[in-house]
Image (cartoon, one colour):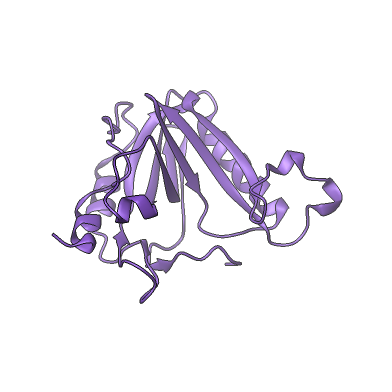
Length: 187
């Protein structure tokens, strides 16, 4: 089996996922149909740049209280609240949802960089979906690590790019689900 077929066959090579199905009654039939009918990967490697891989979105559901939200600087990965307000300009921030669940760590990042204000607005919208909820589901594509592509042992963390989030309070989805390169630049 090639690395490409292995990467496409497994939802995440770096972790053994415990049951991350919807235990909260959040997802409906349309959500599952959307996931199953993807005709393009959400993410893929740059052609000619190392091992080739593709990643499709899937739903992962967690307890809402296991998620923390942040806007981070793309250069330093520093939290927005630690950055001098005078330096919070430009298009250098991305939304992050960190989840620690059953001994595993998941990092979900937005698919691009935003202004500080737009990143904070996105975090506020996600927080509204989390407030008062027991569960939250994230529609995201896995980013295989170099260790994944080289067949290393399973780890306890993984990185994802999120394209949607849903709770019983509502849903927020990216407007498109077309293939994108791993590019963290202005959208």
